[in-house]
Image (cartoon, rainbow, N blue to C red):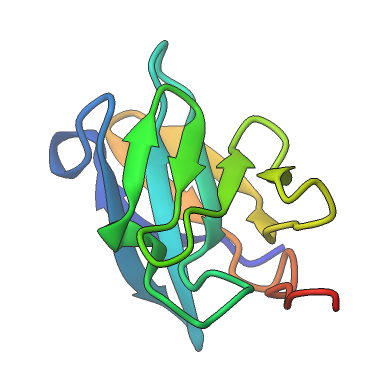
Length: 111
């Protein structure tokens, strides 16, 4: 695994999310309530909309366009249930957040 430093904990407060370019991937970092950092694809698999423009409520991420919802604890769809997001490995070292951009592949919508 090739972890790359993406941000610091000061850049991403608990309850916030932000999009970053890591390697050749656009990755969304979400700092969930309770402190866990999730790295997932930044683009909704449905209509290629930036997920950072959506709403984060606890671990539930809702896309702004068609209101697709994802559980960031699992990166699986809530509505629709067949949807899925990529989940990239994350490690926190001190205040630094590292992500392995090769750790998964962005998902696309199933018909």
